[in-house]
View 1 (tube, helix red, strand yellow):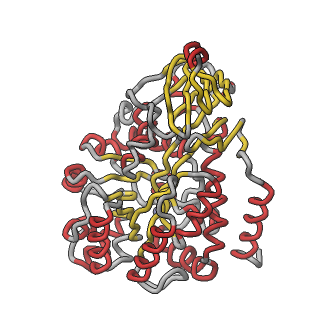
View 2 (cartoon, protein in one colour):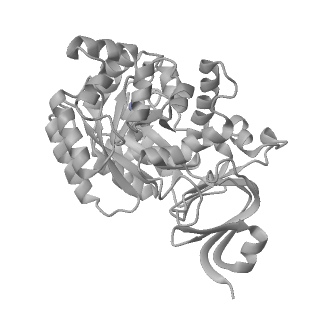
View 3 (cartoon, helix red, strand yellow):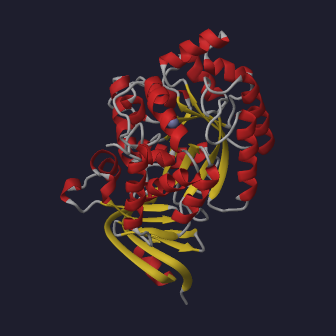
Length: 440
Ligand SMILES: [Zn+2]
């Protein structure tokens, strides 16, 4: 008697991330009610399970969905608006003025919808977002069927979203309440950066994070200029200031962390902090070269982020993890730094761990949510295939993602978004192109 399941997915290979380094040829994943029931050889699976829907994916590798540990999803509407500029010029002269004119719930909903479509097509199943109007981002993520951790952005100065830090926190509380119990959504507190939030705001966030048990998602030590500013205005480096305010603990997701001293790296490891590594953004804004290999040696948990599409300009975690692996080798002078399997773990399980979601996502294991991506290794660009992990990290592109499931639901099938009207998304992009730059 066969056991009923919702889906049975037979893949050329299953790369589960746990156990580390494993690649299982001709295996199947059985899914029931959004959860992985079993992973076993395809031949056995066909005998044991009767599936409502069976997928046969020879030549494809099934792995956990990618986790984008840092993005500003709605900024996809500003992709290419202002390129080839340093961070502060980019922010002060282009991004913040554009946001002052156009930011609102509709901007965020439309931009996040575009970003979710792009990310799902690239095998990303979970994003950690930091942007204004998180309620609009929540609606867009739920509509797209993506898992999301939404940041309660906090910034001292008035924006189209809120009057000040206290107003940001009040609005964030309302959003957490409104979406409480949504299985795909979780929330972080997201102070923008040390230079945009006062000690008072950061102390309130530290206390709230403790009380709610939620993560603090924050840009930290992104540029040398930020550290100089911190020394001038507070008499200490930003990380030391955060430590004094009680923010450096296992709840901290430090985004970028490009400029760290050796003792600062050791302190992040000792306190159980996480780093969201965004290599393309760091290179594009010329922020600097992070010491990824050193972070890992110290024992810091490191995930991968794309940052927003205005500073990358791709929400392509697969491309990002390749860049992370190459950069780690180049910066450390050691070709063995960040090998392929470790890079894949960084973009899946480590990202999930940073979000506190590793008991549910980040690896393919019975009992976990069926957040999965299949990558097609049949094209000649990935042939011949000697080593599956190497092929994914160093040779494959996101256009080779063929299928994506979030919580057991099929979101991408044969390289196309399931149930999404692409023409409608194109029209949204065209509308905002006209709004943002009407004279061009
Ligand atoms: Zn960012």
